[in-house]
Image (cartoon, rainbow, N blue to C red):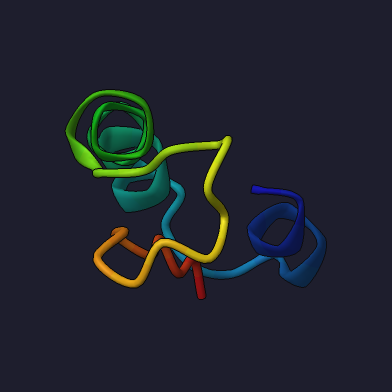
Length: 48
């Protein structure tokens, strides 16, 4: 959001619309076990 505002270009609608989706995937759908960080079958979340 700050980058869009600072550049005075772009459209902030898409990042805002997808924020809820990203939160849901990160907190509700991914498979992970904080006690076993080396678990080979864990899901990875890459935000780029």
